[in-house]
Image 1 (spheres, helix red, strand yellow):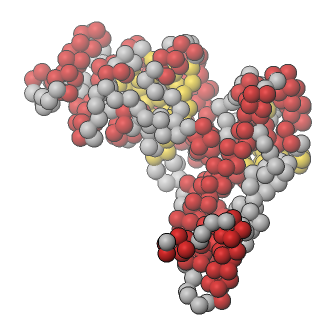
Image 2: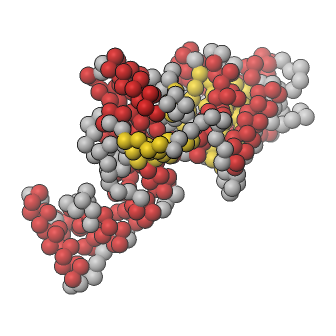
Image 3: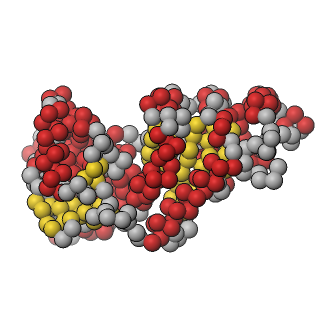
Length: 431
């Protein structure tokens, strides 16, 4: 074969190859070693991937696990660099995803799917094998597959039908290419096209490779789509959002503040019903939601807010996403310094409440895990952390016995424990 990354030689019979590789796969998963004559037509890149998958002790009947869901997925992918490139992916691959036979998928460097887009029938087929946002499709968790194996070997490739390790995926064919950070060279993730056997051709591989290169060039240039506005949103420690866009500074009302937060964590867009559920849960009134979105679009401008689906256009940034990115990089002190308070603290919209609790929990957990008494001191010195008993206990434990600061921390710990009607950690250990 002239190109080892292509699934089929020119003129090869797809049905014959499916049968031949399928037999080799069944013999391999039942214990035969690769390299013998019955496995001679299995591509080396596939054989190596099967070996890695077997070494991970993955069953050929396994299903990719869901690792990120709901608010956690929303916050994670909104903060991921590849979310900035989503409009470019749609421009270059959207035609395939819209034809009803293909899917476009984007994953992070760990193989976790950030976005999976396509028409209903293709999406339903993908759901049956957990090829959905939040699922982990690296080789160790999903076996040989285009995005997972492209990450493993750091090269664009195709995986054809029975070359997949998992039996439940073998009716699909896919092509994927890794994407790198143009500044550091580190893997950011991969772009993938999944569909039928007809994808096993040089054009699909060239297309995903060109898309990955275009994404890297876009990230390296700091460019944004022509005509798109730059939107900056501040919602931490505030009752209402402040939005800077096109040289204007706007203060939004409560519902519009909630809507813009929900749009920021869904750069791929949301329907009116989806946004309404995040705002009102079971009290959803579609007419009210559409009216609020229409008013918000007039305030921000059509160059900022798209409809069908509703999504923000151009470059966007937000203070709560900045904190999330800092935490992802392990920069806990900077994250705490950039956190003036909870996200829209008075909002009771279910989607916003999830975001607020997720961010608070991640930051608090990171501060505790850092074990730095200075960070903990900054936490308990805030209005939202002043009555945090566990934090006061951690702060006291990090200070020298007998020091004035330790005496103050012990006093505050005892006061809060008495107020809450529970024992302190020291008292619990003595029992």
